[in-house]
Image (cartoon, rainbow, N blue to C red; front, side):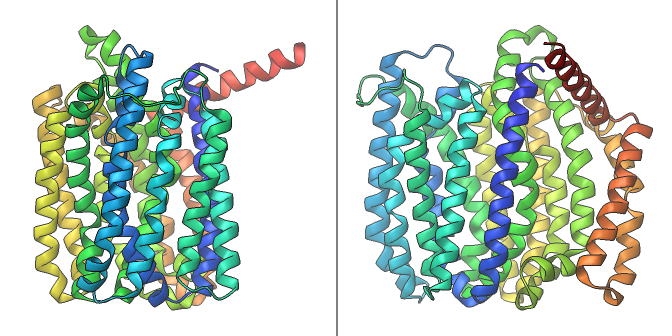
Length: 487
């Protein structure tokens, strides 16, 4: 097994462990807490998400893409993390009162103040994860994130059972952060410094200004629906919308977030070593071919089976979020075509273009959502779809201008994924008619198994790129197994 496949294996193991533990925690907490209780925490978490983009200030990406790292650069990175994170902690503490007043939700003040503790802890492990990714040490990353998830689940469920309401979610987050910090101290690379330095910070701040600026605008666009719903509708509607988004986020947790830590360094490596052969673009095209082979059938299943899935995972009290899921699956499927574009732009040194793209896409998204919010949650869901169309158009324009990606080449790359999605469509479309007459769990099981059979047959019938990857991985695993037995 080569280094990339070994990294992918551990990256997927980590993400699936986190996803499994998170799903179990969500299933339990959704039955212990009402949408109104979850909504209070969700509003605080959404506001903190904006600050989370800034707290790294591009340090992680800088460490991964920098060609030559020395002690001065590492100490400067640590200094940048300390300054930014602790300033953010102070800012959140100061803003907690005004934000609670703006949203007319007094409970929000304490939620934000407690969540600000995260920023005080982050700098002590800020360099560890990016350095582990740079070194492709995904086994250590697995340990850190698994510790976070286990602590989050145990503390969150325990506090909810004790009647701590929305504060159980806050306690879970803090427990997870502390567990991550303690684990990262055990597995941190020995070359990392303990003391910060101002020397060399200017280069990191210049790099971070572009990556963080674009990321902040992009995150603002992503959380805009939650912020708008929290202000213009109510926190219960916010919780329903957030639950719908978390369902859509399952694919990102299970697939995209497992692939991205590996493909980002890979894009950067291909760009450095193979400029004359198209650089990272061929790798990017093969990646999105495999991504859409997974994402499009997944979102088709999710759109058709949203109601039984919500009932099984969250319970009847969350059924109102099912129509939102079905609508927004279209936006998620569209964006999956370009989910790796950000990493391509950053890996090839096109941070300014990425920042401009994020800014325009974020502004358009906010404008569309503000127009839709007065008409209710369903209108907001359709606004998310419209904004996804606009973002995809902007990303394609950047890819064409900066990387020479022609739309005909893109369609040629995606044609087998389109055919695969058609081949897997019959089971979920048929179950739309039959699922009211069977139990939700049975409907999900039958549809998932039928779709899986169609998908496996389809990838080999169409000779899809993902089938080639599976066969290569199987051969290498088999060869490794025989070699182990022979010894």
